[in-house]
Image (cartoon, rainbow, N blue to C red; front, side, top):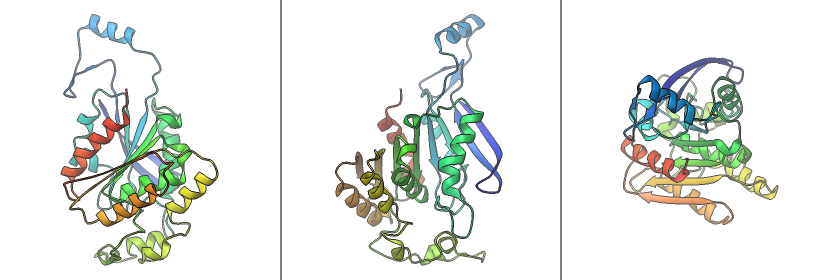
Length: 283
């Protein structure tokens, strides 16, 4: 696998941004353990002959949580090993504390991740522009982002993965005090994104991805497949279960839900991103 750090000027964000990319590397023969060994010259030529030219890889847009950045999946999980041998590019953007929204007081991160970023990556790298080859997955805040993208922009993704999250506007315990506090001062993250710390007031408004999901289904749009998992000791389990209930009340959606022992941590996410990749069944 090749690891790239791509820096470019984003028109949506109005500033330079950094994206990490894992890209299949050819003409290496990739071992099952994720290592690549260059063969002798004749062997390398045979590999080139066997492989199609101008390959366009499917892409997984892998989203970080609220305390991380574009380096988190690389630093804290085995994602590079998990995708070794797969014909899959992994794209990891930085979305700050945006909740992957077009912030009320901030940048347009939703438009950046769903529209601009794929355009840039597909222009620069051998990545397919076909929506059937485009996937998204995220943890915690990134799980909320993946959920929103699948329901709001279903034509852009084939599948969405939600790890340790749900629709965060819906929780049995409405206590976001910890998220509302910001030791460095300035606007609290939720206020900067939504204009309020009381997310319950945003239910059934334009901020609510469930509203978009219903509208898109009514318009006859086909939603992507959803993979959803949460740990039984996770503090967001209530939101995950309320989100599950919404999906189950709309039986036409292709939706897989699981709960498993675990908390809100990288041991859980590293295990379940691997399960998500298996579930995608990428050849």
